[in-house]
Image (tube, rainbow, N blue to C red):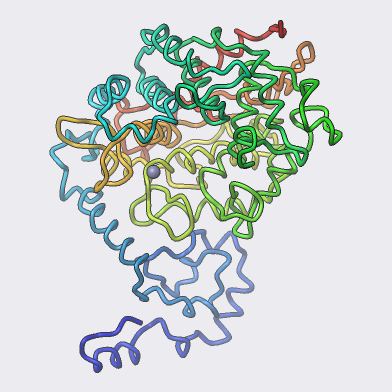
Length: 504
Ligand SMILES: [Zn+2]
C-alpha cells in the first residue's frame, strides 16, 4: 500500500479498499465456483498491472479461485506498476482515437498501414547507417534479414538486392562453415540463420556452401541433444531452432558429420534427443526458457514451437514434448490489457516485436491443439472463438506501433524510435493477426528419397475476414510462413531448389 501524504488518507483507504482479505466472499460463493465448469468461467488471462480485478466469477481466469482473488493487491505501487501506468497512459489516447498522430484513418477510424512509408524506412536501413549502428556490427546479417523480410511482408519485390546481398555476405562466410556477424568474426548460429533467411528472401541461397555448413553445424550439436550458438558458446533454444531451420531449408543430411563431437556420446543425427531437450526448457509458468532452469520468454516459446514443428507435424511433436495447456495459459497471459499487444515475459511491458514472437506462436499452438483434424480449421470463421485477440494486436500495431510523420517504420511502443527489427516483427505479427495458417495433415512429414524433414513445408494460409477485422483490405500484410518467418513463396522456392540436392 503506498503511503499517502496525509496518514488519515492511508487509514481511510485501508478501511475501505476492496482489496482486503476481510472481504472474502462467503463459502457459498466458493462452492458455486468449484462446481462451475471451467468452460463457463471464461478465460481473461492473469491480472495485469492496472487491470481492475472484479469479483464477478465470469471475469476470473481458471487458475484463480474466488477465495484467493483478493489476496492479490493490484494497488501496490512499484517501479514496475508505474512503468505500466506510463505505457498505458501513452497508448490509450492513440487506441481511443483521441490522438490520431496525423495518420490517415481507415473505414473503422483506425490508422491505416503506412505501407509506403514503412517500405521507404526499410529500404533506408539497407544503405549507409549512422554511427550509433556500430554497436550492431556483429549482427549485420540480421539487419539484412529484417529489411528484406519486412519489405517482402509488405509485398515489395526484393530480388533487386540479390547480387548486392550475396557480395555483402560473402566475406562473412568462414571456411570452417557458417557465417559470422561481421568481417573476421567467428561463425554463429543466429547470424547463419539470419544470413540464410535473407538469402532465401532474395533467391540467393545458391551461394551457400552446404557441405561446410553441415560440418559446422555438426560441431555445435551437443551430447544432451541441444545446440550451442557457436563453438564453445552458450547452448540455448535459439540454437535448436536456427540449426534445424538451416538444415531443413538447405536439405542437409540429418546424419551428424563424421567428426561431430556428439558422435562420441552415441548420437548419430541432428535430431537425436532434440525434442526432449526442447521440452526441458519449459518452465513452471508453462512458457519456454532459453535453457533449462531459466525464465520463460516469449521469443523462446516461438523458437521451441517452431523447432518442434520442423521435427514433425505440430499436433504430434508439440504435445509429445510440451505441456500445451500450461504453455497456452502462459502465452495468453502475455497479451496485455488495455494495449492489446504482447509482452515478452510475465509482468513486463507491451512491446511490438512480441507481436511476432508471441503472436507467431498461435498458428503453431492451434495446429497442435487441432489433434491432426485438419477439417476443424477449415470451418473457422470470424465467429469461431479464438485463443487470443487478433483485433487487440491489430489495434496496437496500427494505433501505437507506427511512426508518424515523414519517417515511417514501426516501433516497440509510442515513446520508442522505429527500427528494422521492430518493423520486421511488427509486420510479421500483423500478418499473424490478419491471416490464418493451417497445417496440411495429409502430406508426408519426411521425404523418403532424401530423408529431408518435410513437416515445416506442410502449411497453407488464408485470409481472416469478418467484423472483428479492424483494417481495410488494402492494409493486409502478405502471408508469413509460420515456421521460417519468410514469405510463403520464398520457402517454396528453397524447398524446390534443394529437393534432390546431395553434398559434393
Ligand atoms: Zn522489442
